[in-house]
Length: 249
Length: 337
Image 1 (tube, helix red, strand yellow):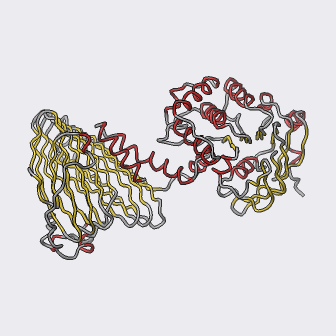
Image 2 (cartoon, chains in turn green, purple):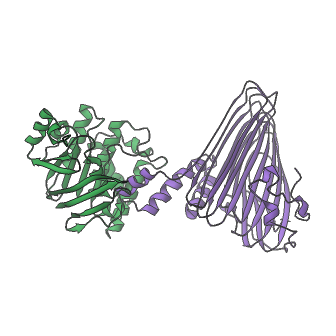
Image 3 (cartoon, chains in turn red, green):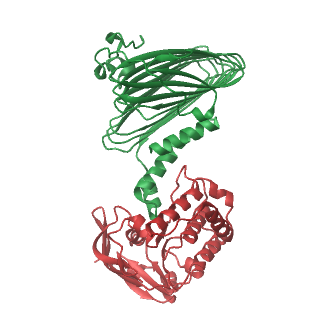
């Protein structure tokens, strides 16, 4: 279970998360919805340990262990995976090399045996076929010259291969057309399992038609201000976020 | 500009000489070093596995021939071996290439010992229809001083490719002067430096386009850590009659130490009207968002930095057309990073 308690995060001098408390039990998918500037991306960065997004107060535990003292790579080895809203281009590092390096680094950190090149290739072939990805694309430098949809598929492919236990999807639907959205969502749904928790960060309800959440939370001004079942997402879509915004005095 | 002569300290340029502004030889070397002793060396060197003929200089003394004439398809391993401590030596070598010959020149500057001074000169003529690929690998101790100057003349219709790879020294300079043949002549002039500690290297080149329609492509990349200093001085001169010249120069460096330094001086001197010339120069740090992205996927920070640095430098290595040399340089560099 992911357990976030009273999390405060400032970026520069600006407080962004102001006492965020949230529990996501293993096996569940929770959606975080909220207006622009509410702190949605900051939450993803704070959970994954991005420099500049350190917690000034509060606790974050995953499977009973505190995450906040770990560096990003150590968190990844504990199963934390942040799918980026804008995946980064890594010039000069072929996608295959990148993912294999990441997978084996995680395995080393966990004291597991590394995956051999042939075994890895076999895994990638199966996973990329399921996402309808061109295998040759994976020989190119990671994300360089990839379309928005290709980059998102690449994120899902990495998820499928790295098999994280805590998945944080930051605006995964942005930049996707309907076909790509369906393929990406199928990829995510295939990873749903009783021992995985997922946090789906999204501005729009659209993604939640494809990745059905167990719970929906509204993030506004750095806190969870409302929680409910899947119907809350539809209500937000219809009514907007106005009633959750801080009112001018 | 007079050549450096180790016997005459008045030939050691100081930074007051514009071309030596960033590499103050007079300051590092105040007087003539004692002459290096004769040493015995065995055949070999970093390119030994690639076969071909070998010409070697041990502490400046020729081991066998001191000149070479290339004909047909040949590989020459040109070795400058320094095995000296606190002494100095010089050598010069002339390489002739027959028309139509295809020469792979694998040059190594191999240093053992400490605090030596080495001074080399290479002269080469590349006639019409000849093709030369020169790969220079420089591996010297951190307290050595070395200066090497190459004068290369290419005729119209010649092909010349050069890649210099260096880990630097206390003070090190590699100078290339290239007379461009013009019509049908293609020049590639690349460089790569990976420096740490207090090392210094200076890659200086002058390409002079004297004929019509000459092509030059130059790419130098470097990475400096700690208090190391990389210097790139690239000059392309296009003379009045050299219309149709297409010359491109790029220098890109990563500064990975807060007190490391890169000095870049790209220069284009164009006296012809109808030319295409461009230069690009960037100096920066590793991309923070790329580093975080890699760490988020589980790659530890040091490994992520090494991978990004390697990828940055490998662009130059990938341009080496000779496969054996390319792979040799790649593993040398991987071990060094």
